[in-house]
Length: 576
Image (cartoon, rainbow, N blue to C red; front, top):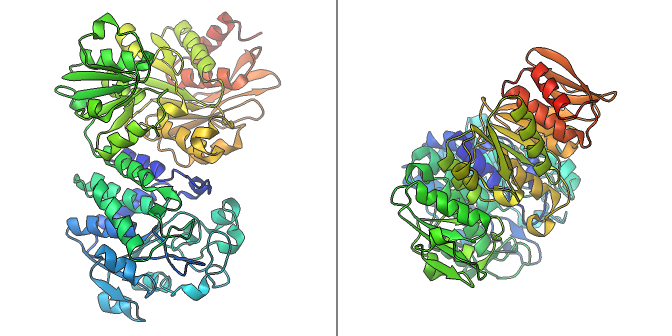
């Protein structure tokens, strides 16, 4: 459960506005907030952020708080809503009841056990309220954040959900907002909460919390796609506006509803049983008939899937062993894939294609080949990602571990996909180069060793900015636990923030400075610090030290004796 909620916590931080919200995330607050709400008796929820110029509330906040209130009600929790007169029509349009009026002794009268804010302004250091542009909006804001200041003295648990640093709850990450968010010095909220949930869009944070409650309760408490669409439309019909344009548009923070549907459905996938648990009788669609698509089709057939249908945009040649599968060539049609229980997307197929959105609307999970193959494989995985060097690193790692007597096979991004390795190789362990494209659509992918080499300005047309690329690559270790290892390159300071979000063991590599645990280069020589102390492994003669050092650390973690590691490096002429 913890790993699935950690994955949701990462997912809801998808950052379409490139606000750098991933830097604000407090590890495990989503799970802890959900655990607290599972014990709640009476929850008071609030929302409503006024838009300067429009003089009304926005579409981000009220739909999310309504969805969260609905989830809590399904759990038998007594809920009520409170907002100010400006936003009251939006709440009424949603059917958010009972809707209380804000008054000085509200907490004393209603006596909630929990108080939750979704996209509600929090006062800055000067006592005023600001929007993301740093413009003052105090004249439009009723000080409902005072309820959260009062709640601490009454022993009420508080939860804040926000997406920019100027909301209730963001006082918990006040210094991070100042450092990381544009206009942070001016807009940073000082209103703290017990738990703060950070999201790319605040509605998404509320859906994420409802998803975490679903994971904990074993019930789907999320709104349907139709309910999501109706809730945003109801807010617009009641006078609400998009928070970015300031116009009455069915958008949320400038994003089309398809983006919110995408997040909602990806959260929902975390509630489904593993494919490995339900492979028999499963109807699978394959999106993209490249090397990965064909290999995973063969693997699914071998493992007992009931039916497989394959769709490709080109005019591919149909392999003889898959001729009996239904095929679609020259495009992707919903009608062809609509009967699938799950669709596997090849890494070369963009996640934002129309067919992917249509499948999500239908509630059909769209997963990566990497995800599906890892769940069907049952063998240990080492996964290496980074903007450059991942393929050369796994190749080098494979040579070193093979020299040390391990049965390993190498593949992954732009090589043999995991599904093909599982069909062809009798290896005990697989070493994979993994791209961010593959990591976008994982849920349960769980390598015993995850390596993050570096971060560069690549694929920004897909991810938007470096911070979003970091978030996606960070998904590589979302399912790791205390028995697993994350290897980070200390020479890239942007990777350091990932260590505090990791649940397992962490080691470092560096070509510049010693590390407490891991490997580094000093005066041209390789040093390894591991359980049995520090060792010299000889003089480095290979280029790209982080690749070799990551292979050394992986070998040490997998139990290879340091002297044998040294001998294998000498045999490969990596040392001089």
